[in-house]
Image (cartoon, rainbow, N blue to C red; front, side, top):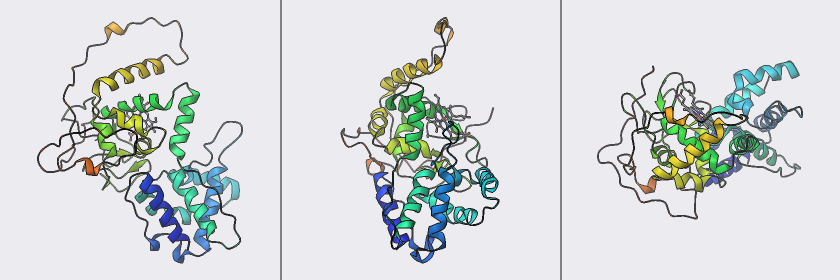
Length: 321
Ligand code: HEM
């Protein structure tokens, strides 16, 4: 049965992702036959992938038709003059997709392959997992960055917050180390992306967002994918509570990024103010401990961390300038 298999596959990949997301049988592919929803999922996979062009434009089989359906459907209309069943299957898949923590590309092409497997006489379609990490790493490699450097650059998200992913909650931070004015540039972000997600901070699950562990905190789907992918998980874990290590790596990767395509510049770094230091060990937010960590790096032990006392915190938004 299609949905039974989908649930199994999603559970499999969810467990690879350290995520307890469960897709209920009643949620997709009604009845689990080789029916409307199964073949609509297959057609969706085609329209998603065929956005690719050998001229170098278009993201191809990246799930964008699901993630950015309001804009991408316009291209389908131009191509086929109608979107019938595409918009239906997007509407059906969307609420299931947002619960899984999978990327749109991973989810959409998984659904198509599992759907086809319910049709007698079909081949067992191949399925490749890891769409967004693969796409980002490929783009970054093209600019000269290896996987570790991408993770180190993402230390930037420790001082970031989201305004556009969910416009109903502007200034929503990616970690809990914020006060009424600003973020701190520490490794709390790398820890909290690994904690089991339980809720969305604002208006339900938005494209690019997955469940976060703390009220008021936003978790980017791409950050979570990097924390769990076999190519990057150990670099991610290595960053947890490694303040001076990450400071050095982030600085070096930023220096490399800022010089991309440039030559003949004069080093004027001495005009940059010296930042205040951060020397504390990071800690689990109150009520969390290592049992809540979705450990994806199996080659090194997870660092031992204390837990802040008290009830689970609610992270405050960073005020807009
Ligand atoms: C590698 C892939 C990356 C992805 C997929 C990504 C994605 C995102 C997204 C979706 C947001 C939230 C935007 C919003 O809702 O307003 C964001 C915010 C941010 N990102 Fe990234 N990012 C990446 C890499 C980077 C890098 C390399 C840097 C800097 C070195 C960076 C710096 C920031 C900052 C500072 C913010 C906060 C912006 C704000 O508060 O307005 N990101 N990122």
